[in-house]
Amino acid sequence: MKFLDRAKIYVQSGAGGNGCLSFRREKFIEFGGPNGGDGGAGGHVWAEAVENLNTLIDYRYQQHFKAKGGRPGEGSNRTGASAEDLVIKVPVGTQIFEEDEETLIADLDTPGERVLLAKGGNGGFGNARFKSSTNQAPRRANPGQPGEQRTIWLRLKLIADIGLVGLPNAGKSTFLAAVSAAKPKIADYPFTTLHPNLGVVRVGEGQSFVLADIPGLIEGAHEGAGIGDRFLGHVERCAALLHLVDGTQEDVVGAWRTVRGELEAYSQDLAKKQEIVALNKIDALTPEEIEARKVALSDASGVDVEIISGATGKGIQPLLHKLMALAAAARGEQIKPVEIDEPEDEQWTP
Image 1: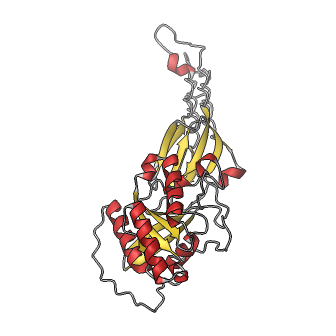
Image 2: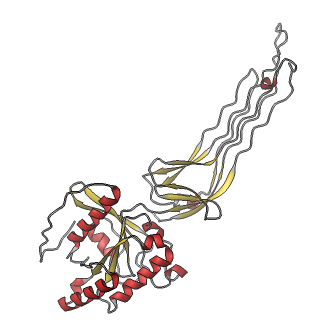
Image 3: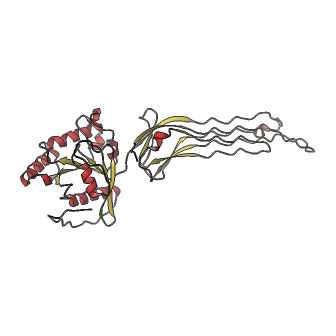
């Protein structure tokens, strides 16, 4: 399935049915009087967050959504039928904006959450409504109210506990594939990942978190360089960020600063999230190189740097328990501390 996280759609609610102008005319019934019924209400247009969707691809092929109108009233005081509501199903985490793409209408981040996008028109009154002691034969009936129509933007932000960021070829996809059942594309050239990937990481019995891998950032991404920063919105909801740095490059500090600069240029809120820095690909480094680059990265970032290898599994298990603790704390859950005894020579697998 193709990933699509942005779509423009047009919605229109149903018009109300017209009221009926009718009089009771039956043989042997004197003074029959007005008996025109009211029109039915038009259908509303709702947006609802559902759990079985993870992309907005459906709205590339259908952009117009129109609810049905109410039925007109009839004689014998019969009210017209109201139209059914139209429900647009969107993935959990979808934000709905006005046509200007700046005014937020709703942020549907809970399964089953709904928002009214367009209200259906009310049905018109039939002439029986206007009967009075001074007007016993009204020849007046109201038309139904028209429906509302508007243009809106849907923007999807994935719901994940931990976000995975870094330069292209930092080993993000390899890490995701190693710790979860996700199967992202992995190759030895930049921008292998063209859209976000999600993976469920199971750390222990009943303990798991969702990891989001987004395409790599390069210098100038906030100005549109490379794939740009359009996918950074998918890690805005994360409890923390895992920043992978390729240990095989000479300037690991420069690589870390490049990504940090793009995060700060995109959003200060995103830049303030807790960051776990990990030096990746240590299987290709000597112990002296690992120590030197770890110290340099620690001094620059001001945090303890994890050393891992996504290819061999070295150092991954302690890192996952650390990430699990952060995800659980964000959810308000309590987890039991686990003693980690990682073999030196055996490859860890999830």
